[in-house]
Length: 593
Image (cartoon, rainbow, N blue to C red; front, side):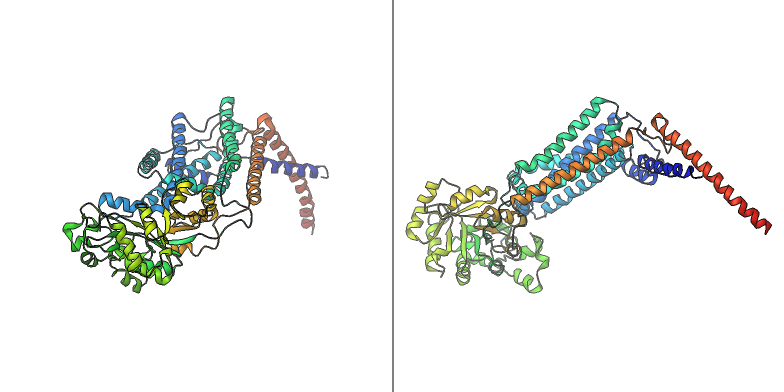
């Protein structure tokens, strides 16, 4: 008996090793995965790959390649469109101008993109899980059609948006300055997880060409991901204590998420939200009253189709002030809900918003003067045949100087027409340029502020202009990640649709020192590398002595498993005999008693 105990213990250790080597099929799990991927619910048959086999035939290989391509393209488009959220309002109004009716196309496009990406991602997960279980891939024809539809949608949508809205690619590039560190971690995690099925098939393939191809592609992607941080630049990776003050907020047409744009209510809400300045658009009525209107017609933001149905396409400047005053400039905000925020307004605010009218420049300047706010505005020249076609700038200056109590130093004068004349008439105005001109020209025009689109964001540019006392304002920034980037870049102010949101930010969303970031990405790469090595070693150790199974029967190369099974049978036979021998005297004794 003493000699059999060590054998029994050794046999148990061998049993543990056998369990580690054994490849379990997880029949219910595999059946479910194959049912979802191949739609073979009632007639599922195991289809394990044999040693040296590929994971699928040529047709299924093409289908899997299309699946991977579709996954990449839908991911790129979803990320692209998700980062373009800052400009959704512009996109929807662009479509309104072309189609003639309002619809939240941006949100619909986002939902469709998210739906296709979710569908493709599920198929990818199913395929990876089946590969990890050593199963052959058979994609159902309905999924193949779904993949082609998803692929077509991503390609067409990307091409159309690139043609109509190419500037959004600059937004995408800017977003990497905030998201790239986290995308790097996510990418490394994904490639690390894929090491499991890749190692499985690498050690099972007999073809050196296939093995070399798989390993070459995998290592190339892995190396690229590991080294990406070396080429990464972000202004939000900076030394501790070097972050400047938060950019001042200028309400874009007021606070258009809380009230109808370019109305007194909107500007009041912007002031309440903590805006340092107010931005608007000015045109002049046919009888010489400057008023606030962004569009060249009144269709979008008034009820002109009800009051003047035959003049919906007439330029806004060709109406008298009495006609403009009779229009409602707030009801559209409640019915169209352009930012999806009208529903959050209280009953009192909704009632007030619905009664807003077209606002005059004089009323706007008075509000800014009372609240001590800066103002900046685009000034539209009236169309041909307008009485103030050639004197629109002088008329606007009259309102600033004689018809309002605002100080000229509170006005950021943006129009570039007749700038020298304006500077001569009122030298206290803060001359502002919307063009990135050479420094010498900016200084000769007495420019003190640049008003640029946010796609021009650059730390070097901001520093260069700040060195000659020219501050920078970026428009229109409404998303926290863009505001964070502008903050880290060092700009002095931003024009925003969401002052109530950005004013609550106490620090950028992403901010870390170079040492912290280097530690983060190096640790990520090292942990990933260690895990991948462990995964490959494990598969090598398991596959070197275990031929791939077919069904639930396990066969071991060189008879190792058969020998182990025979030894275990002998050990358990001896153990059983001794145990029976020990029990027999006890039974005999009981019989005697």
